[in-house]
Image (cartoon, rainbow, N blue to C red; front, side, top):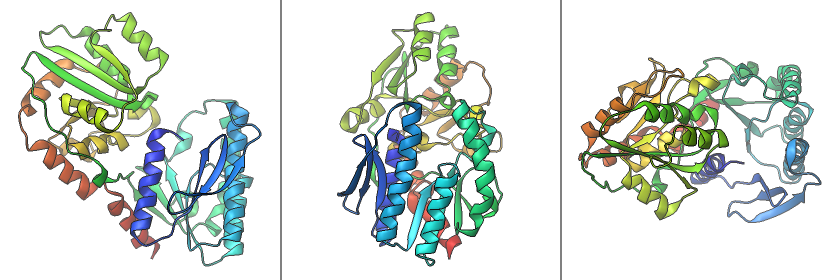
Amino acid sequence: MSIGISKKVHAELEEFQRRGYITFYSAYCKKGISIFNNEGKELYHHKCKVYDGGLGHWIRRMDNIECAKKFLIKNPVDLVYMRFHFWDVYTLGFIKTIKKNNPRCKIIVEAHSYPYKSQKPSSKFYKVMYLLDDLFSRKVKKYVDLVAAVSDIDVNIWGCKTIRIENGINTDSYEVRTIKVHDNSLVNLLCVANETPPHGIDRVIKGMAIYNGDVNVILYLIGEYSETTKKMVSDYKLEKSVRFVGKRSGEELNEYYSLADLGIGLMAGHRINYHQGICLKTKEYFSVGLPFITAASKSALVNDLAYVLVFDENENAIDIDRVIKFAFDLRGNKEIPKQMNYYAKQHYSWKTEMDKVFNCLS
């Protein structure tokens, strides 16, 4: 599980606990599968015979489903919140067993990145998964009480009752940044990510490569980035301007938030058919109070926000002159971090999103 997904799952668990639920959850860890309770205590561990590689991915996925199923047979619960894994004989068997063992249990399936089949299968494995999903998804509506869709699509997914939600965050866990003001000879940009194609950091780097202005632009890259991105920086001879910082958290990360003028959001969401310009990372930018740039469709709500500079969804290089002007326009306004943090609490908390889910479920 990636760092971002892990943080999301724990934030969801905290919200369920806030609502009075005693929670249990499964997770990949220590080369196997573990079941944890409300306090994060490990109740059960299953070591996978094969964990790494493509085959290991398939086996640990099956083991995760089977371990959760066995646990729930012995420990019936009132509600199951399931992150979607593709439908096949294992996932269908999982929800069938839960309903057979405990008919009153409500099953909510979180469908993220729907429609997922608009993304071209990256391997033969995923081609097979798509075929199995086509077959088994037709049978799930009998067992699923609600689909929570992290999606732009307004349809009843798999024939099930569906509510559209956004990825939320634990807004109380972020410290509002203290702005470090520099003179107008420098603009600091910050991207915090474990890089995937939708991040579109290549668009920013290409823009820096063709920029020939007088302002010194520094891009700090925190997290993990591809060899392709590192080679691009080298090919453009931008080693002094693009700095790979590595993973940072806590006070170290807060220092970079304070140093930055702007964050880098989702610059190529169109590569996975996502057009809203807001993701978990940009919501974190809101929580700490860091204005940012992103790419989004003309209809996205993000276009109306004063703290966000929106670029068109395409493969073009980012106009660094526009970025610099935006940074200068906001520079010195010490109220912005507080305003952005307040906006995050009103719009991006898991309380707000789970209110939608429970209102629809009832």
